[in-house]
Amino acid sequence: MRIAVASQNFRIVTGHAGRTRRFLIFEATPDQPAKEVGQLDMPKEMSLHEFRGAGEHPLFAMDAVIAGSAGPGFIRRMAAHGVISCTTSEKDPAAAAAALASGKLPAALPDIHDHADGGHGCSCG
Image (cartoon, rainbow, N blue to C red; front, side):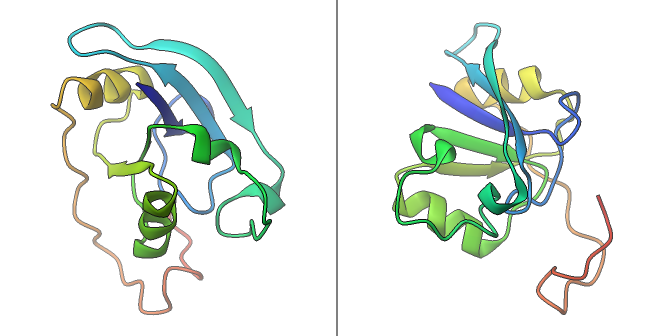
């Protein structure tokens, strides 16, 4: 299973999947350590929030994407390309990828701040 994990600093799982431009790429199988096989470090226009290209996007080649948070638009868009979107409270990217492959990924913590503006003015992260 090829899994992209949102990680703006390439160290911890970060939120706002649609705005994230940096992802760690893992190959993972059930009950095995996940193996990092690459990184995505994309320009701003390649974040899913900004990408409007008619072509392929690197995330569309994944089996799954993990982030600390993801909006319904991101989830729908990824699903339209056959990619599973998962949110988690796990902060370690390799542990998150291994847990997803084993069916044991911890759920994300509830969002505790107001996204009345659709999350576009949010300063969390």
